[in-house]
Length: 203
Image 1: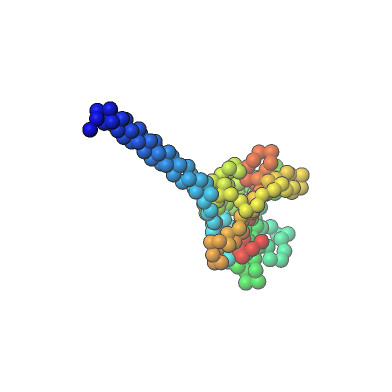
Image 2: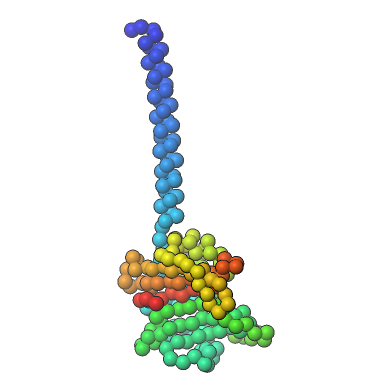
């Protein structure tokens, strides 16, 4: 075997090994990128809001958590609402004919008053008005995407004089026995969540 051929073969082998190593590294990097992409596109559904599960819990479960004496007396029909005039937070339930909860809405857009009823604030336990995955009023909009993935649809909305960003999630892919829809509104000036609704079977 000629010496020159051997040296050339060694060089080719070395270059091939380097190329293979680079290829593996690139492949690993690409794999990591795909993994991140998969994580970013991952969907997650929701079951509860304010400690209640639409489609499963009845009004009685809500009355155990939130005292009936603080219900909005002006509310009529199939809806029940608790409001804290001190913070402007409200909790609203839509019920079916059998008092089963169809939808739950928590909002920070109710009218605030200068007089604060501390007893009412404590009884309403507003700190528990969060989703099962931990989303709460006042969270940044990015937090919504982190928890639930990209919304099925988004767009501008207006409530009163407030300009909002609307995010709509549909959970029918998770099965028919779970809440099917979640609506989230974020204030466009602050980018923070001001209202959430979780509903079963649909809004």
